[in-house]
Image 1 (cartoon, rainbow, N blue to C red):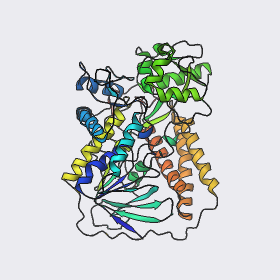
Image 2: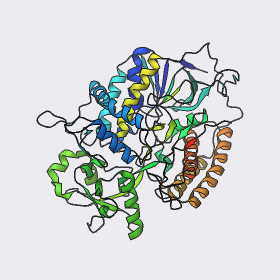
Image 3: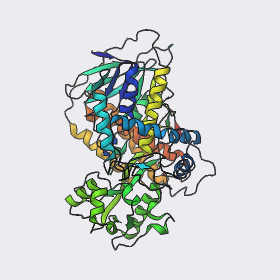
Image 4: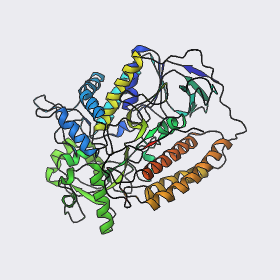
Length: 531
């Protein structure tokens, strides 16, 4: 079996993975693996932008307050303070990579505002900010000789001393991973004293999501199987405004559209948000998504609408060129028509329990970006805080690893991957059927509004499905679809178990059985796998 040795092994090619690679490159050999191409990640689809205090009259204190209000009392104050204060350095890192954020004619930053923010502090590059950031970072990463890029590479499992290697007397730590080359089907290993998970979220666990197909919760499942704790997985953010059209696959109408004046209305053009929240259409995402869901259920309508017609065609084509063109391709003219929208699974506020500098409970294993739970988002993420967290925590993680690197006391011997009696799969329909079943039951039972009964039903079926998936996994040779299904099922069960532990309604978790807010805000923490 081929073994690749490196100082730093990074899994994931979104903003957090690429930025970590850039900062670690001067300190040793970096291997960066991604399931498909470098640009196949959530970052590439981010429209709105990345927030940082920059405008006159704005302050770190105001940004902190907005973050904590959105987080419904569950944000960790010291974490919020650190990340918000470090955000300007993150913006500087992106500019250094070549990202050209929008400016006004006078040369000042063209900052925008989104739901939950009390000031304009969103740096953007039109309505394709993520794509602009991702392409600039990819160009920079590709130019650095000490970074080896492995595309079309799916990590099968992390290698730990006590479990995978059977070193019972050694400290429990991660020493690398087994991986599958999805083009050649070769299984190989990466041996590294420092593994960084930057794999993004798990939006594909739901039937309706604006996430790309890669968002199957791989890093969260990998870390859980390696023994890491998982925190606050019940807080799944549903983006309130995903374009509703039979041919519009996972296309978001950015929150910045509401920031620039769009109003949420019903089919008759009547605004409805004011009866749910005094902030109206600029309320935080959890409130907006729940309000839209309530209106749809109350009226029986398949969708609600955004109205930004008052801005006119010239403004809309300049400020939101990508969104305007996309809507027009479906016969919707933003300057003349109401935009049909529905909520869709968007962001996982929980994940691998981690510090701001990526430290997890497993030695040698770090986590950054959406797969990590640092305490920044609490019970609900404030708009555009995700890319901010990704770029800041990636730099802080790289700084920690460079200053205090984990070193192996002796050469770790990694045994070849064993296939046993596994044979080539002959019924792919089993995988696709289980995939569809998980996503539908999660949407029906563990969605925007939950109940004890729905959660119990979901857990019973998920436990059965995980047994079936485990049997399939050991009976047949691994494939990318099998690995993603395995990880998806783990994340689904973690979400349900976390939701069952929270006996209140807070932020993104709303249950009809416990609609009130508890006096004390406490995180839900699930232990890592001990089998």
